Length: 317
Image (tube, rainbow, N blue to C red; front, side):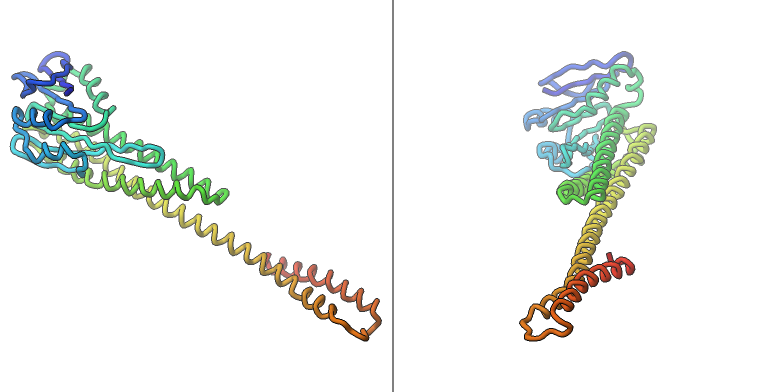
């Protein structure tokens, strides 16, 4: 059932629910209609009284729209995305809005905390009527932009945690999470990059639904969206650098292992030769068998010690 907020010229807003008979507000009132999980019948019931364009109504039935601003006769149609983070997977919550001269209609598929917070503010603010419905939408857009900043900050913190984990102990199990965060950043860029252009247009747009005075407020939202896009790029670079550093660290560790194995092979190479040569069957040995035996034993001890000392002196180990 749609939630209706009627804002009088003087006094506190009236909040109620109304299923049928929705229409433009009476003179001296502003009206905000919030529709959650809309049906085709509900949207069709709004299209006639408010003269909404059929193409915009069709977009509201399928929540697969990119952020956009479309101008129709008598109203604007705006689509923005509120980022939701579940674990390391990010998704977008679409908020559609129709802005007319004295009417704001918001349509969304999921509960939205930002809309509830705006309603609570309207209860305490008696100056909204003079600012128009464009200011009400500014309040919504500002809270959505701030919420998106919080989500991106959480993503950046997660990447920094993975950086510490990978560089400290080099455990590969953190890699799937890093790849999931990189996918989430790609999703965030796909949602927020068009919103930068959208709010840039709103800052320059003046008319019946958004006054010149209210358009200035959207500059603050535009700045937040620009910072969000910069944060996305910075986090993507950080994630790529962490991945490169991890692979470089693993390559270095592999090189260290191979260097030690090579040194170990070099130590055993002369020992293998000595034991192999003197392991043959001889009829006569020079210097007597006892003397040669001790020479061979001495060589087997002295050669590894000497080679290890030489490797350490050359910093090969």
